[in-house]
Structure formats: C-alpha cells, structure tokens
Picture 1: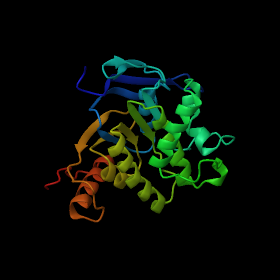
Picture 2 (picture 1 turned 180 degrees about the horizontal axis):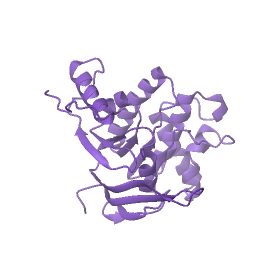
Picture 3 (picture 1 turned 180 degrees about the vertical axis):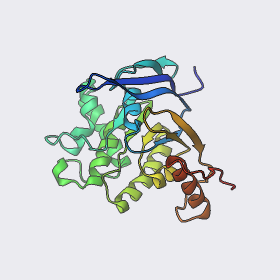
Picture 4 (picture 1 turned 60 degrees about the vertical axis):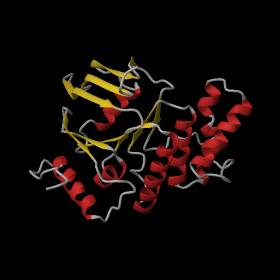
Length: 260
C-alpha cells in the first residue's frame, strides 16, 4: 500500500491547435502527491491549466506523458474510485433529486432498496431532506450543487475531484457551501482535490494549496495552510496568508511565510 492516496507523476498534456496544427503544451511535468483524507486546492492565473489537470486526474483527458496513480495503481480513465463535481452542476433535468443521486448506483446495478438507503444517507448529509422529489428547475444554484456533491459521494469514491464547484454562486451561498463542504469532508474522510479561482476560498478550505504558473502549467509552489480550523476569514493570520498566496499567483515578490 502506498503512503499516498493520489500520486501524479511527470504528467504532461499537449493539445493540437485545430486551426494551425501547432502543438500547445497545457501541462508540463506535473508531480503531485496527496495523502489520504487531505484537502488540496489548485489555484493559478485564469486559463493556466487547472481544469485540464483535474480532467487528466479524472481520466476525462489522456496525459501525453506521465501517469496518475490512486492507491498505487495506475488510473487513466473515468472510474468509480474518482468522483467528479463540475461547476455547471451537470444534473439530469428529467430526474428528481433522489434519482440524480441514484444515477451511478443504478448504472452499477445496485438493488432498489439499497439505492434508496444510500440516497437517503446522502440527501441527509447535504441537507436536502424534503426536496427528494423535486426537479432541478425547482432548485437554487446552491441546492443543485448539493445534489451534484451527493451524487458523486454516493458511489463512495476514493478521491473527490471538484472543478470550481461554487464559482457561479453568489458570495453568501458560496461561503455557506464552503463551510458545509468542510463538514462533509470531515464526516466522510474523503481525499479532495479542489480547483478554485478564488484565493479566499482556497485559504479557507485547504490543507495545502498548489499554485500553478501560466501556460505551460507547472507547479510553481505548494503552500501548507497552518491556520487551525474553523478558520476566521477576518483574522490577521488568515489575511496574511491570503495576501501572500495572492501575491504568489500574481507573481509579486511578497513572501508566503506566515511568520513574515
């Protein structure tokens, strides 16, 4: 058994520009090790390859070079061990909240009674009791994302991959869901890889923050967030780390040291 739940080794991703035929290097020699139950955020300039890296880890894109390992085994395609939550919610509008959550369970042939018990468990976890029979058009953005998270968790993945899941929500709802996600993380013990464009969000959520440089994306730095939880966004320590991380993303010469 490996010491790491997720191990990204020497991953490079090259795209071909359809108009010019030229190669575009999106990711170059990415190496990242993530421990079990760790919460890691990935940040960087807009368009730097954050989502591409997450999609390679998920198996939705094939690496041009390198490998991704989960529990020491190579994984290069979508699988049950990797759950994915998208920014766009990606719910099936013709299915209810319960049926959306049960979709993967149905696909795997889980018996109806067991599906019901599991969907009840995750409906309760994401605080959607009473909304089981509603359709997506009846839900707020925050509620839709709760359904998406419950659907991903219902398959009991080893790693939960989240691509800017709160990016389209208003700030009040986003902050509330960040706190709820930490509660879900603590209750489930999942390993989470979370792509964000929001520095405040990354500092609030993560054990470590991976900073990517602009294309071709390489890991510029990895910051360990040593602020105890629950974190106060208004505290001096939080603001100092936030300022340092923002400076790193923007390439300003400000130290990331929390003691500086």
